[in-house]
Length: 462
View 1: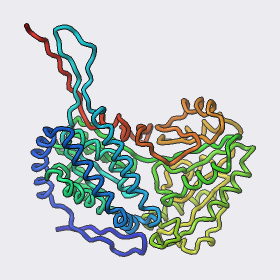
View 2: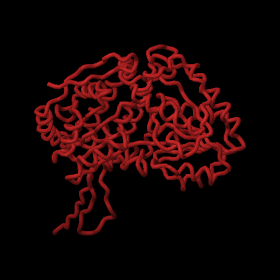
View 3: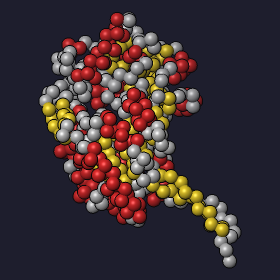
View 4: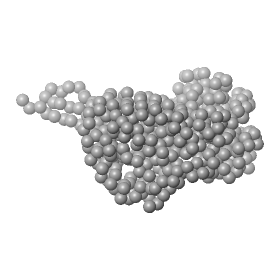
């Protein structure tokens, strides 16, 4: 039986050594899930909601242990990992609160002699493929609505954070979810592709890279099923001349470097009006230098390692290429002694004199580096913000709501923020354009993604 290992970025040690599920175990899971889903669909919504309510409470009760597991598996500072459980709870409870209304039938105006309505039925068996960077916050977005709608879920979590899926399974078991309604599979890429292509899988939701999204799309190419893809980002911020720098700077520093920059909606490029550019950059660099890079298990650490050395190597190459092409790095790496070549530990970098010929301003970095460019007006900022293959979020920093609203209609992105960034509101749709993918999670609209419509058209006889 083949095995996989989870290498902790904290110290390079083997944190987990587990067996892959075999092809026979995958087949057995599928068979069990088919029958379980039928019974779960027939369970009244109020009973499904009660199970999910208990599941949420059970998971949250283990917050402290879960936070340490997150830190050891993917490197986020322990002081920050607990927020993910809080965020999970916020999103799950919101999605639970809107389930009844979101799943209710739509009834058009009455027509004498007819009964007409549109019902929402579960897709059936849904496969959720979740990433390591926000292992609970990315998966909860579709997991909870999928189950509340009456689907069964098979979860394949990143092999960097497999304990997240197992925590889910334990909490569901404690909540009384019937066997087979939620299943965890630890499988490699070929087995994953085989699973997704199986005709018994009725919907797929993937969060990850663009390359991974194409692989998922190819895997389901032999059938017609919903396929939600939340992929990469290269999210911009625009600091207008009237921005309040006292709040703008700390928020953009946090948006750039929280989670070591490993966020699809993190800030990766900033455009600043020329009238406030020098002041903004000076403040931004000073704020960045306040970070403490080190072991995520240390109490004073505010910036942990990246997930693996290969990831930090990629960002280092981007920085070197930009500097070789004329960019300047304004943060001396020697201020962060833990930052060492050949390790996942990388100091935060602030680059100026950058342009869009550089990969650091075009290709997703997914690390603690940000490029800052000077712009002369809104039109130049808009052109640069839209000059990207991605479109997840964009933020505008200004006191002028009308100006922000006018710009928002022209920015090619899924979400536009004003005076905020790197945040998901569970009441709003999480979606993107271009190579960021397709589909919707969160908000009432996620329930449309995990259901299919059935029209009821009865002619009534006397």
